[in-house]
Length: 193
Image (cartoon, rainbow, N blue to C red; front, top):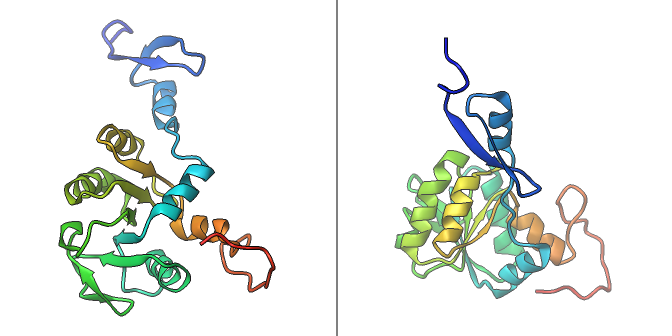
């Protein structure tokens, strides 16, 4: 039988700045570890990232039209001025363009690396982004790896996580409907390109 003193203890920082020690195996410790405390760039900062960028590489791009990376790639090709590169070691061509095996194979260092990979792959993608010389990693909607975000920032990268670059671009450029699709509405509002 183990006692609380024999059990591994973790120190947790609470929202009010105080710390407390709790058993590492407790449900509370697991809950606190799973909570999101990392906060990425604000909407204004995300807009600045998109405005400054000239090129985007999509890591995990798929030639399958049913995949979200294909949809995002199509949108970026048709609705933006970005030079778009597709990175997938298992594809030769995506959306009529050459697919590259890795970020370091691209003809230029992309301004943004947009990532469609599972959360557990994000640390290795961060290392690839660092090796390529890119400065911004944008991890797509539904993908979260807080430790990777903190690590990437510690290495000087700008990190956007759990946000769709297509939705963000459309939102800032007047083409976003509740579901994230172009509404087809004609407006006199000036859009930011």
